[in-house]
Image (cartoon, rainbow, N blue to C red; front, top):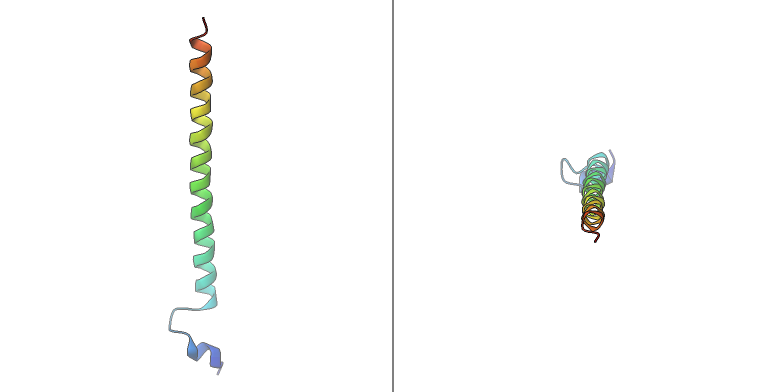
Length: 55
């Protein structure tokens, strides 16, 4: 029997840790994409307003 497996609490396997790590990276990527889309949208609105209000 693996001694390191007895030291870990049940359910805390290396596979579970890897899944949590990947889930965290996926959530971070989604938040970053939402922020980037919001920034691009804001820039598009600013350019549109600048073009429409040219005197």
